[in-house]
Image (cartoon, rainbow over all chains, first blue to last red; front, side, top):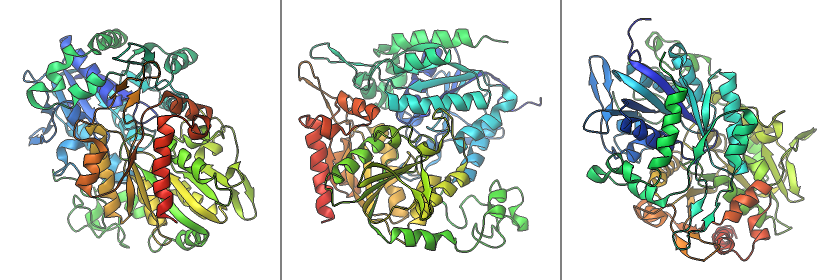
Length: 267
Length: 317
């Protein structure tokens, strides 16, 4: 295979859900930061074209991308350049502008993202996706076929209405022969700061039960942490990239990322 | 790389001498070679869509068409749509329809207690599935042989189904048709906007949660509405605070770091219809397919829903 922009990427992991708003982008961000903390070089590709959340989470709102002779240069979230990122968010002149594209144009953009970003040498490329099983997902799988992605981390919240959509996503993975590395159950319980009683705001247990039913690894339960939202919406020196290790969720993602590393052995 | 531009007849990053996506030469001109859109342009039908007059005829007996939108996923569009539908249908003289155009993740059948139901065809078209006599629902959820099957459709196929929902469903005479949408600003949204252009959309209710990551996407949705001339009825802030059922202490789960929906409403010059707090029984009601307001009328969230719905009903008096 001739040298391409993805040739230096050792592992490709997609982060999927059938359901919107379950925390795909926040799980992608925390997983990436956790892998970087372990010493891996990571990239995040944000293929949510109409609702790109990754730039904000990495404190990179307002950054722009540059072109080099080899293609687009990703935006680095850290000074050591261990975490690279590409998102359509960086290409919008005004972040309030809607990207009102039909399928074919979205497909073409994703192809460009996958072919033209010079990632260099990466241990992990995480791909954050929009909800659903449509153009973006089909385009991503088609363009990654020759690179044999390691698999998908599927994110859900515990309640039935989310699980119903995520089952469809698992069906999608099966159809396109994408291995499922495991399920993360997000927003799993909220511990009241006043009385420490845990309330299952979005029901409970659905993710683990579903993983069991499908014979898929249950990677872990991530509780609701308002501190996370505060940290992730801070820019500059206080950005999440710099404060991640102080987050309540850091130990949980340390475990999840360890498991992901075990499940993606180097060839 | 020039910034992306919204879909117009000659897209900004089209090849030089692009004949325009609606032209007879679309996809066939020499300038089209190499353009990623070439195939789509060449195969798309040109000229006025014959379905539009049929849709307009169906919609003639629908008094008010309301879209429920958000740029962001998971903010509660479907739960709000269904709650609004249940509430409007309390008035037995009011006829309400819910059209679920989320093709990949259709939540409405579950939330409205219609899981497992099927669509029947009659001479007058597809029959909606009825929750009660004056509340009918249409969703792809009713058409899947196995509810776990993924619907892996590209844009054009999704558009085709939405067209059928509008053209072939015998909604009858409706006071309200509520259209629940998936997150984003893509095929489904463009299709609903264009198919209903002639018959007219009364407006859109935009749902958000308080944090900036959601508001960012919602700004884009508002921009979309303005681009396609859909009036915005107002903004609803969902998941706005949490009251612990144990100690009644208040917590903020999705902090409004940039002022929440209130600030966004001011910024974008739209109405803030209301704020709905988190109540774990809302998720439970959605999963069980029952109306939360009917099950738990004493919840602060029910009062909040009622305030928003009253405001909306007043608009249409």
